[in-house]
Length: 186
Image 1 (cartoon, rainbow, N blue to C red):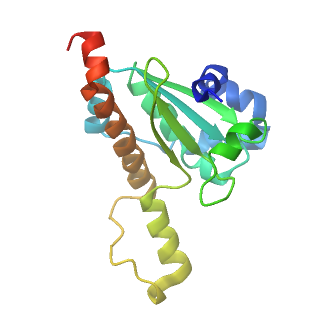
Image 2: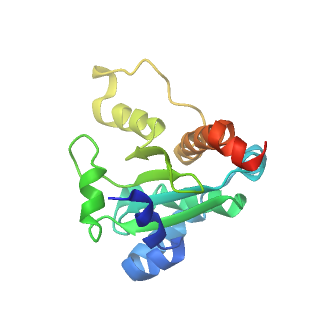
């Protein structure tokens, strides 16, 4: 399977919600979207990206983890003209779902990042480290300490930064790619 074909079949953020979201789902996504606030430094970083990043997110409009992460991606796309974001529904794209399983399970969201010409750069799925630290604290308490304290920033800000780190890494892979540097003469 050519995974970049799935990107090309993907829907924009609003089209994805329009097709797969109920009114309740749309309201949940909208409410969370309103809580995502990029810092000036984050906005500046996203605006500095020069290599096209084709970002495919396999998601479910019904999924709580998607509600709490996918609007972050839309904010990134709004801040960076080279950040091309598309969504596919996990259940409708069972062939992709079977390839992007996390720990043997059908998890969402799962993100794949492609170069301008469709080469896979990175993939990441499920929850970020900040979310897992919070879950460990909430579900296991002192019985299973992680040894790492949860930051003072609200969880949404931490998860936003976690995702930005993932996308920044992909951007630098693209910028330092000898193949793309030769193509763009930089």
